[in-house]
Amino acid sequence: MTKRVYNFSAGPSTLPVSVLENIASQMLNYHDSGMSVMEMSHRSSSYLEIFNETKAMLKKVMNIPDDYQILFIQGGATQQFSTIPLNLMKNGKADYIVTGSFSKKAAQEAQKFGDVHIAYDGSDQDFKHIPTQDELNIREDASYVHLCSNNTIYGTEWKYVPDTHGIPIVADMSSNILSKPINVSDYGMIYAGAQKNMGIAGLGVVIVREDLIQEHQEKIPVLIEYDTLSKNDSMYNTPPTFSIYVLGEVLKWIDSLGGLEVMQKRNEEKAKLLYDYLDQSDFYKAHSYPENRSMMNVTFTCPSQELDAKFVKESVEAGMTNLKGHRSVGGIRASIYNAMEKEGVETLVAFMKKFEEENR
Ligand code: PMP
Image (cartoon, rainbow, N blue to C red; front, side, top):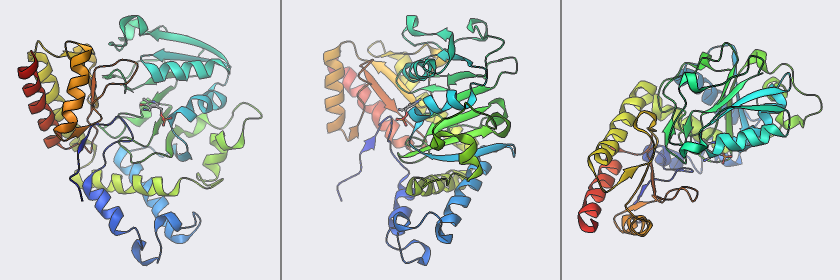
């Protein structure tokens, strides 16, 4: 086997090696079932065991209260952008906080279905900033307030839960779910595409307060009715079976290391290595304002676009990959999700130092 690289991809992204090894060892014959998980009927007892264990593990690891439903849905986070208004916009009105590309897309999609008010728009500050409480302008009669807890492209992250005066918060946590403990009951709904901290693509995870999904707009496609999905325990149709199994294995790995407190500590240490280096350097420039920095996606630029390109090229030769910033912002982005080991970040910092010395 060729050596594994340090993969800084924003998603799909690196997975814990022990999880991959475990999955590989079970590939041909899962727990004496005589078949791979990929080959199992979603209604078989072997698969239902995996499904129920994964749900129970998510509930345990995230400390999800009993009045929340956990849904495993085919697709990803973008699919939820249109699903959410059709299910949760009870009075045809919802407020959106726009802090980056995905929250903007979510708002644009919701505009097709109702009266959307932008409670904050960070585009005039190049999305370097997360609004403070007094910068938010939330309507009293909004059905929900949508936000994106971590902006994957710009590298910013919410550090507090805004006060919405009791209006349910719907949070896209695609890029920081499972990175730290959160209080689930601060939110009406949490959703994420699984292909970062939760495993692999093909699965959207929804955690939603039961009372919010009992009514929805009439005549919406059955496969996006949260109520129907919930009543059928995510098995109205075939769920993404293998992606759910991978999520289960990732959750067991998190649990075995000590849960989300330990994840947070590990992630803080890794992010600090990078931000400390960026702060003392006059060569690199971090994108986001210090108080809004993401622990998961660290974004920065070299002094010129030519040097950005050279950085990316030479980082590949140094055993790292996927450090190119998103096409909409350029520069460099290091995604350092749960599964990125500290050694990967140390390798990156050593490379940054060498690159700076050689190119200043
Ligand atoms: N929201 C956020 C915060 C994301 O990072 C992404 C994908 N990178 C999406 C939404 C879109 O997710 P998907 O590709 O699963 O539809």
